[in-house]
Length: 538
Image (cartoon, rainbow, N blue to C red; front, side, top):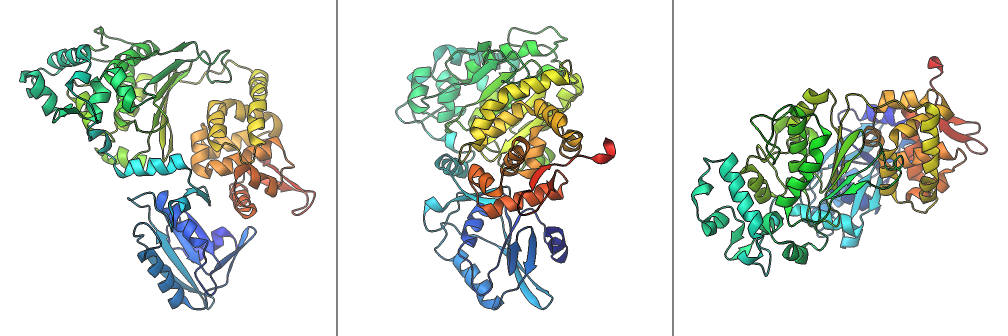
């Protein structure tokens, strides 16, 4: 049976993600990788008693359902895993055969692994992949979500506060939040009440926000907020990597104003503003920009190897932030949840009216930007990073001809193809390339595959983010391999992506069922996959 037919038979399960295992007479050892991956990513269903044969599924059933179920659950409750893994389970009898289904929820105690930390897995599309060290480190930091920057920074004192920054901060508070009680305190009480200083030591938040750069770099060696101005709509279109790059500044307080100064000219300002960028009213565009900037600074993972980055292109602004979200973005937007990664930094911004509350402000960014130029922000979210993109024009510029777009994309293909020839490829690099060149990618597919590009936009939106959200990074890489070399085999693709041949077959099925690709010629020898053209629109 097909995947759709299988799901129809198990129709009371919520198929967020799933993995089938034959498990005819015993719990398969490979299931522990999937338990780890589901626990560390977004949860999913693990189904025993079903065999995957190419693109189809065959219900074989399990021979001793009670024993298999107990063995599986006892292992999860035992010492094999580093944390307790809770489940809910269902049992089905289909055509006289018993099938067991276990839902593995996402864990609040990541990373979840079995036997040793080396057995930490994450879910990418429909495959289980071993987590890298930086990904495991990110899980540990997320365990302390909302607390890490509240800890004391060793070997620091009041002397490590940048005096000018502190004075400017207090002056700003007195001006824009005159009624707050902190204005009445002397300096020592002020620093203590705001937990910039605690028992004679700076908190990490206080150090980052108002500290001296030299001291900050002892704890955060690569401390910086990157801001690049790029003469083009993408990196590949620009004649150089950037036309302006922000220099080094003392702390987050200084970085805020320097970044705001560079962002301000990107939007139309309708009102008289102070030197700091504020007046009696702010234009909606400037409000959205300010909210996005403060959001980035409040919620960054400052202990990650990556750092916050703003890229100002000719038609959009991109805010990149290391650190995942504590909840799905839909839930954060719907409930306006106050779950800041860095609550003390958030409070310091709130006390000077640069942040309205401790939430993520997605709704305010969206509302103000829509009022400003009637476009919606775009998001590209992974478990360890968040990207927000704001288009600075109501419509994307369309002055380039199809010929020019195609040429621009072809001029950058060499870099991409070099990466795709690696075994395995750098998935993150490929995804960033696709994001920066999505319009040219659509143009390229239009030139080579006709109305396929229209089908891609129609089904998966106008950005690489929606394409990735629907398929997952690995499947998108497979799609690129098919586009650039129709003779790519499943075995070759598996080496490039770093997964098994069988997993690639699963990706192919997903693309085929979405009517994105089709098979030409023999299904076993001499044939090839290609993008599917919508014949009705030709």
